[in-house]
Image (cartoon, rainbow, N blue to C red; front, side, top):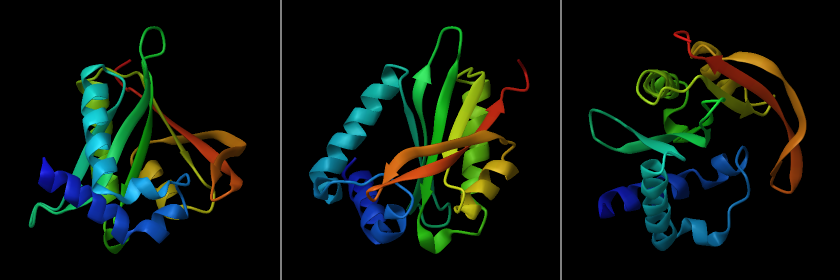
Length: 167
């Protein structure tokens, strides 16, 4: 697991400024190997409890970790829903990797995990992420005003949803 922890830390360090544009503010501890070890252990425990699922995006040619796709905020019972999140190394943006990974995770979420609905939020200026969601079959449901605190500012987010076609 040490290789994965190091790869995850390197991914975040390489893309720190880029990710900070779109993601919630992270403490300095986030950028340490200890934090990444605990993060991976926590993710594994949450997967075992059906609370969260995190998937690595690896280049098949090199096995390099270039991104992460996650399903969080899992709600079972009458809703059977979760939230989708993803981040990709800036050097690989615009090549279809995120769309391919999101499509695979959505298919897995519907076919294996049996979710009924997957939701995602994206800032209106993040056109690349909007394209990923649209190409992956998500539809815009609306706008959540001042929804997420990013870099000290409350940011609006477009609300996207995809529903399991088998339901």
